[in-house]
Length: 404
Image 1: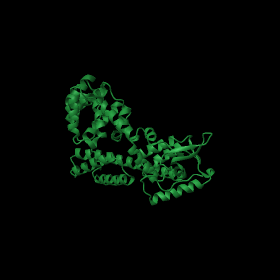
Image 2 (image 1 turned 90 degrees about the horizontal axis):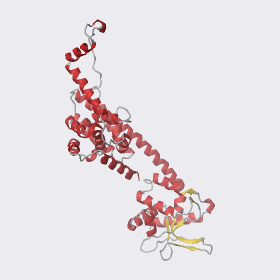
Image 3 (image 1 turned 45 degrees about the horizontal axis):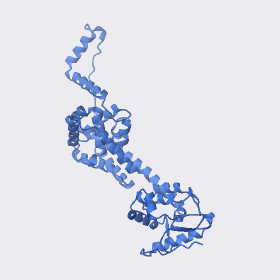
Image 4 (image 1 turned 120 degrees about the horizontal axis):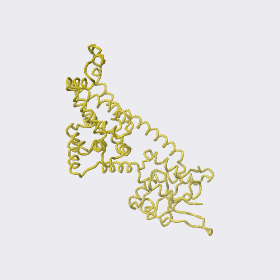
């Protein structure tokens, strides 16, 4: 029979936790192989990844666990052959070239959390003694039985972690919607010239926007939702629609007008200067939206790199002109003046400026002066030394790094 050591080899001291884990390992070893739950090693690894917080693991420890499992032959972890015996050099190589000092630290974490057990040989080396036919008679290394014995616990913890993640997602959505309402209502009351503590509220909304860019717990997101809900209550009483008393206008029959349609149109435009200027501005805006931009960034990539821009849109962003329309509203919320924004659109084109603004919003926590930052990028674009592509690629690269 295999002898599982209680005391570690070398200078590592004996601890109460080590003795407890050795006792559990003996209990697992005493079980009949048929009583050991069979589990797919990659399924248990995926579940452990979902529940990593519950077991005190980070990405490095999971990488080492993945490497250990790769040394186990077969897809299923059963009652046999659960001791793997790679050297540190071999294990570090399979863990994507991890330094051995880091490898030892993560191995200690996995042992300390009771997910693997050390089965040390008399000389501390990891090796296997084979029979004449080549089958392994005894092996000294890392025992995976603790991982198998805790299968049910790991899967339960993974389900709980998924549920919490879904709650956090829903709470973040609520916070984003309330934040959007607050920004737009703030813009509304300022445009109306209403008195109120708007600067204080704007500072609170900016702080909330920065917090939403971070990884928050469920309690933190709910606290943020409560704060945004209180902010919305400050607008009570200011949202009562103003009475609209329009004087009745006589109906003019177009057939009775003596002048031709073109003369009528000129007369109306000349009699209302502001209507004419408004129509001209709308026409210029439409021309700007239709103007092509060299090497335009696909809107799908923009949304993938800059998901924070989506809640500010009136409707789901599926085309570049919708992104441009969103940017026309967004630049004011970011404290960027109309002159700076017009200069950016002139230098970069409407689409390029809108993509740049979306990237700035995604990194708003790192930008102290959005107006000055955009003015600097505009100057580079005027000199032919700037496009939005590198910003989008950098954000996409950060997203992949976080996911991995």
